[in-house]
Image 1: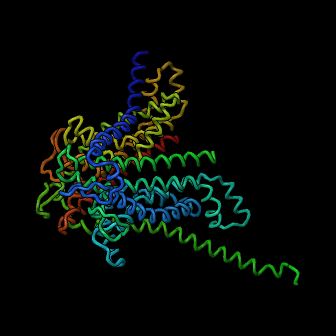
Image 2: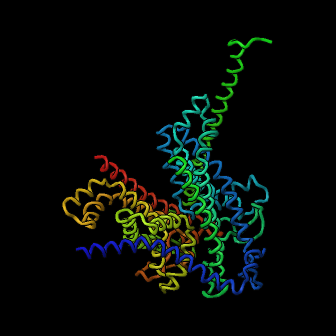
Image 3: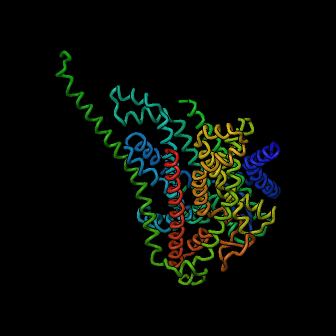
Length: 291
Length: 298
């Protein structure tokens, strides 16, 4: 009996340890191929080069155009998700009645549950044609439309995490502001938001990480042209879309082209990993503030 | 200079108060419209998909194989592939996720290793799905030689949704009252007997809700499956876990990437089927959660 109990405990521990094994495997898989890749393309060319043409006869391995594409789409996404998410969170946390909140929150969650391939369809066939009426010179594939749609996709994440942070602010602080005659707007903007600041920032950073890793929306609607530009009207390519592009073709394994996707993946992993760490450090801080 | 009296100070104060109230109302309207705008986008998304694909949707569309002619093409192998994939993913993720959650919640002693595992799980939940695709490609497809099989796809998706299953299970376990465990121990039960016969049955609806939500995430995933090399043209239904496969989101992506309007219509119709499947799964999860909550109260 005692021995069976111990065996079960060990088995359960192995399940828990699997998550660590997963992380180690991710790093190992990415590192092995990245090292092979860097033997051919030197690190300086990879990180600082401004041309990315590994699939052409004249191969160049400067990853900056892909990074620029990812940064551009993420910036546009945050320009949508940050103000809208924060305003939605303030409305839900400070203004809305309980019944409104009960209806609005699950409906917002639906936005988060829509598969990204569906958002891609929406960006390509609804948002882009709509924007072409308003933005002169907007190409059929561009950074603007997938950026906006990615912003909509991460909005529920921003609003729900920011709202959690705001609801964590002690009611005494609000009561103090109201006692001094402040309106709800003044209380929200000068008391609640500053008090919840680290929690709100954590939400934003986690959302940026989601936007950086978003794949299908950009693979469908942003085009596949690595281009070092901050012009949102022209076709670009993000790091994630490049990985999809190569995976769809029939690149033989073990070739240099095949290894590029792991090198790009490594960069993507490191970037999002740092953002996630920063976000969880900030979240811990806001928990401590009002523990 | 005039003396400050109630009569002289009142009008400016009232004006200031009125101005602040006005500003507050404007701000409220602004915040409210942000919420409405988000909901309007959701409505626009649904409308664009319905108007794009409703006419194409038919029983033939669901039961036909893919074809070069858009009008004859259907989603049967893709839908079947998605179903197999979800079942297999669930079968892998459920025991592993529940096992990990049980260890952390019931057996854990709060050691540093456990803290590390917890932080690690939270971090894994935020790793982009395409990175899991690269992991699946390097580990399952290549190193473990599973090739581009259904099993490799399910293993990849299982790792992807594992953090969701673990977090949901831990929450369900935490909701089980302590008195239940103590009563079981008092009757002489061992730890595992307590967990297996008392704790797990009570936590089961909560765990199942978490599993369904995790699987509804898995069924919509496209990028990791493309990365591990799921095929885009599969004119057959997978007959074993070693069989090549395609999935509904991949079929949709394949159709969206084509310029012809007829294929875009197919994509929209495919999306409608995918959304219907998701709606069914989420309704089941909500129904379970409600039942669970009622049980918890009584």
